[in-house]
Length: 70
Image (cartoon, rainbow, N blue to C red; front, side, top):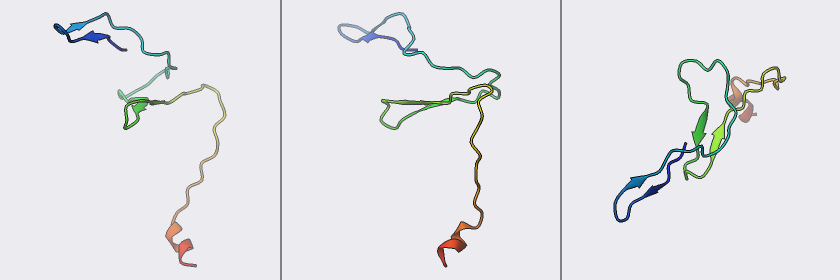
């Protein structure tokens, strides 16, 4: 949500409105945020949970420091 504001001659706030449309994730639990804002405040990173979409495998490499010493 966003609110247009005016500060001169006095502070005034308009009616809140949607800043953009974004996908929602059903059954979000534990009040976890599904988005973040970039450090400069100009972009949002939003998790897009596609139900039924295949996921890519994740590879976890343990003890990777040993591979650097070879």
